[in-house]
Image (cartoon, rainbow, N blue to C red; front, side, top):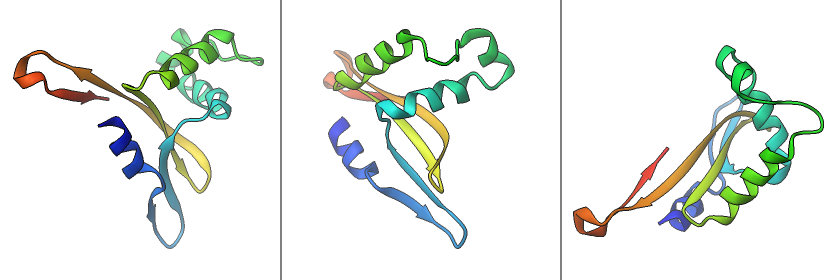
Length: 104
């Protein structure tokens, strides 16, 4: 299921006359931008630890997420600039005929 969603979102873009928005899977080089963005609000300033160099805990977290086939860290770009992020988590349930659900 995850691979089908990622395949569908690969190169998904919404083009307008002025800009292009792309949703794609996050890459290692995106992590500093994502952490900086997450730390750039009143709540994030209290819970995130953005610094240069980036604490290794963020790199480890990304590697764990990226290696889990039931997780996907996504990036939203507009004209090549990261403007958002979200994480998809696929959860397998025993009930409902063993259905898998996505949580974001």
